[in-house]
Image: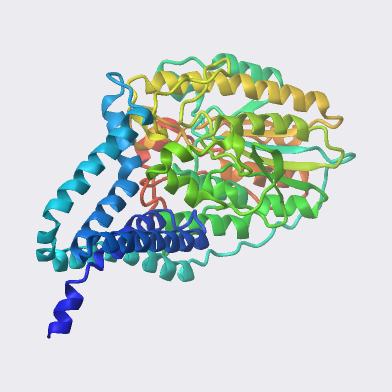
Length: 528
């Protein structure tokens, strides 16, 4: 009995506590991070608190004081970045906090806390058992999520669609094909109604360059996780049996689905194309056909993509800790790829589209440009919008001028895309094929989005005459390449019924058809 009391009175919570922030982050980003990074973080955290606890035990000769002070230091270390962000969000527009202010204040308050615990630490033995039990219970939540995900990962087996069977009907040199997704780019009439923004200049510029505009086109899915895989597979995504999966599992499902069912890219590879797949930094379009040449973007320039999850854990985890002020992850000094939120990535992707048009071999280029989607970083002229210290990308959604910032970014991407299109056309001996699409629409200041806020999309085609003759105003992305293969590559795929599905952010695979009213208001289903 005495031995049991000794064990329950030992401060195991010191080690349990430091596991929680690491496992919590892992559980909520499990589809994005490498397990080995998490294991390294766990080993380092356990080793660090062991050394600190041992040192304090040597000084105080008291396990209770050593345990509670070690835990206080752990709490400060792991919560500093979260508190810094929280305070800045509340103070934006009133006072700008910097690390030069918060870091010394944190050190001072920690010192006061250590002094208090040193004075009254002998009373901690009364709650040691309680702290042990509490930290164990706390750990159960992320452990449950991790175990559940591992179990679900074994069950996630997306169907594999049949490959496209077709013979090339195009005569002469094969044209380069560009499939450019502009994330959250809504249709012109929708931009006018939602934002009072007249986008006719951009639409007219595209028309003058030979583009057909789908004036009633709608997205097949209101979530990127399904919209892009559906377009590249030329089919609706079979989500039967996975509708209850969480967001991380949904991400893994769609990534695996796209790896197996990138039928557009695989079909063009068999017809002599080099498939250039621009990695977006956004998890679902970090994947693709294993036969593609995956191109990524970082401080070192354009390079062949490696792991989708390289360093993601550390770049997310360290800024939340007391190391944050010193770490200040500087993309320009790293060998990593830029994040999807980086303006540098966007500019490099746009430039690489121009460079691609100079290649000698026929290419199919897929580029998911995560703009005009937030974060709102560009003015129309390409200059960067300054952000206060502590500003996070999600803060753009709460900004009072979010609608104006979104439209400013629409103007920016309009100018950039016209430059890209002009360069591609000028550099192409054979007239290129260019498809410009939004993956869904957007309402910048309303996160409780209705179906209609995400359905109407930009959909523009620069295609051979035989395909343009069969285009219709309500064509949706699932039929874009079906029609191209049928008219230009001798396939017989036929068209699917144009439909739109909606789902919630946290359960993107739990889809349902948009209401009849929404579809009637924004979309058409019959060919013209």
